[in-house]
Length: 533
Image (cartoon, rainbow, N blue to C red; front, side, top):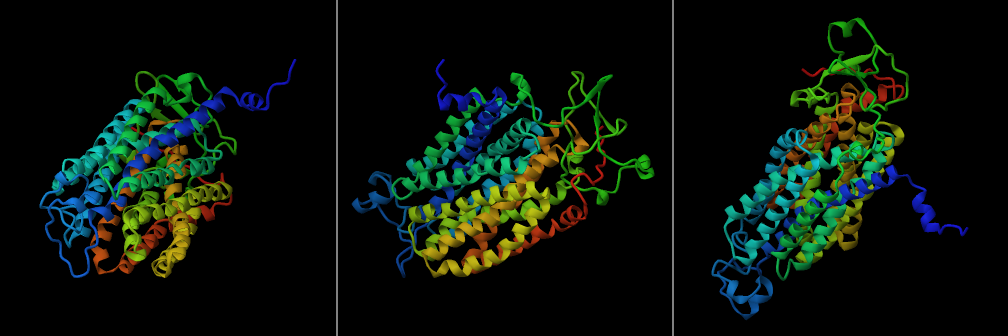
């Protein structure tokens, strides 16, 4: 019998379960990358919506002519409200505030919608919920671009489009994190999710390149093409997404499935110490060590928590206040608020900053800004590897935030020295800024959503993820808005604001870092029970 080819031997060396996990990993990666792909065009197109006028010139009305067709499309689309300074109404001197309003409209709606999305998403099938969100997001992303083809110059049109798009995009993050966490356990969660979270940077890079290709000739396509891609991926989601391993009778690696069903109540084992205090009430959170590894010590059979179940025997979804009581949720949420403020300020304003500082056109600035996301890929993976090795998520985030603050200060000075310096600082800043952001939104959210006090309650994961990312999105909304108001006084002031936000993010981690460092080992903490009524 002939020996099997090397490629076939490689394929059959993996089990059926492993192939399914690899498939879900790649599918959820591509699904959320397409979400970020559709968010990036607005930052690329900003340089085209407002062009720098010639020295001493004020925005003057310009009528269609032969020379104008190269920048705004066919001549018959040009009306008397277009100027040499860009696309009305963003061609006036207050263009920073108007462009900031677009960012704020999207991000504020996203932040508000995220809190609702987790509650709604955990009560609906993930596949249907995510498919709806992607189709709707694709439609409203494309609608923004249609403003170019239909010569729409109403600020209200663009603001409303951004608001609705922000709301529907909240379906994405809780859904993909919940799905991925269903398939992968805690063993190497930091590394796996660090690699997986590079979808953010990959989506930003692709979005920048796609939007940059048309930005100078037909900026409407910079939105329509990404919108079509998101909608197409929504169809792929509907056809192929598998929410849970049990749906196709695969074994699950999650260590949270050991349970005893008795008289309609689910009983879950917890590791804790029996003290007089516990008999009278929950333990002091200060005595709890957070984000500890499971399965590393034996558990006493009497250490259980009783949680109510519904008539079908499945556990009821956790409440919003119940999720807030999970140790670490509030601290990490507030830390992410400031970390995401820094990250999204770069996301929405970096191309315009490069245009002003390095005097590049919108396409070149958009392409150069992708280096920040390239650095973010390495930062997210590095943060995951370090946190897995040390088993200390908060300490890893704190170290990177501590290094990010001086880096931001250097960025504001060195980037003015030339293109080479800008490239180096983009890569370094991207790694240090995106590392903590990536770790908190993925591995930390999944750890807290499957916290020992919720043993087996998979319904909690969507709510916890939405709370953390929703709070972070408040900062994501504030950052670009503040940048819009501060940038007219000088870009240096914007960087001072970012350094202050970075310091605040570190401040909220101090208590968690102290807890982690005070724990002698990964199983030394006391896990307080969380009872749902």
